Length: 204
Image (cartoon, rainbow, N blue to C red; front, side, top):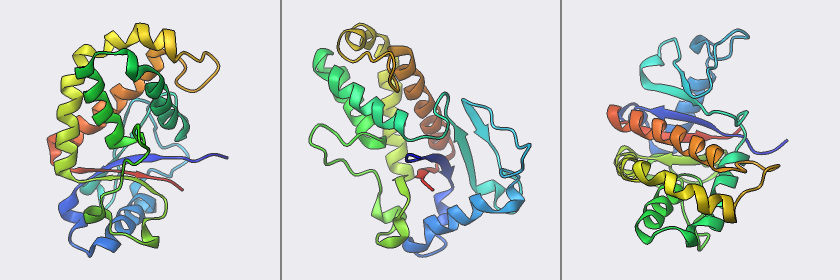
């Protein structure tokens, strides 16, 4: 078994009702609650769409189901690796924008130093175990703006991707898969920014 990821958007004002180190445990407990209906054997899980919980905490979070990932973190990791192979072959402006977008979400960056969990939102220490991503509303708004600027130029990555990053038997092995993953992240960021919420990625 590999690393998994569940991506949620959440009302940070609700999380901030408790101390920083208790915020993501609060979100995790709400997500796990039987009342949500998310764990029912017949619960709908539409790829490329939202799962809205039921129950008392329903107003405070939602879960996004990525396409063609089976809940694994591997496609997100490999999207960063594919970008590593491509980024030197695209224009400087687009490279800067996609660097910022992927570095803010799932990629460690060219120097391997990107941080994806904001201590102000998540706290620190052992309670952040299993937290792969925690972005505040301000950070989400900034990343959503990057996505909106990037989206119109994304097709220019198609040819360099085919030349330098294609891996037909691997995760995110062609440009359509790369684009689809970015589009799903774009939907997450856009919805969270619209609501003024944060974005969290949890692993079990």
